[in-house]
Length: 231
Image (cartoon, rainbow, N blue to C red):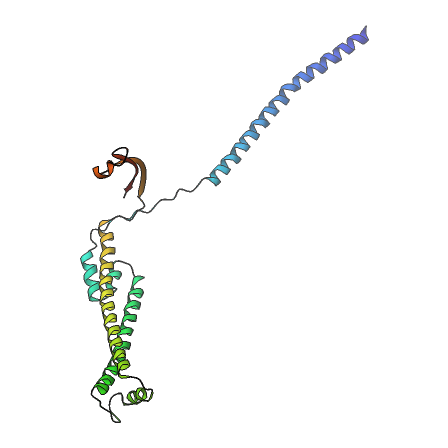
């Protein structure tokens, strides 16, 4: 009898102890689960922050009403490249002087040979034999020894004169282009914004045909595309 009572008390104590320990284990499990969830959320937040694109603020350039296109043109007409410096386009100055330098070299080169063949043409045309010390005496004898015809001398004279004149016209034209370029840059700085607020929209539409073409088609309207630009 006592033996059964002892066993019953031992079983009851074991069950009570197990029940007393079960809430603690459950609480620890819940707390651990919440901590793991918070840790996972922090990791996800860090990944989202690292992958999120950085917002870049676009630069907007507003017009400068005090910048004068007239001043830019006058300065470029007086001194090539001075208008570009006024417009803060200094990188264009070497281009301008490089082009004008080429035209200047062409003018000098062709003018030199034009002068030579002009004098030789005068000798040939008037049947003059130059003496030692006369202009282009050596060249006259060289061409005569090479049996160069009179017509070849005349053609060379005309060719060098034409090339010289073309180089002069090119230099003058480029001088004018330099002034126009300075005006355009100054006009944009003075009157227009240089931001990226540009958009384009394409929508379908109907185009009304002229009567002469509509007679040969099904209707007076044909399908088309409408393109709208917003500056």
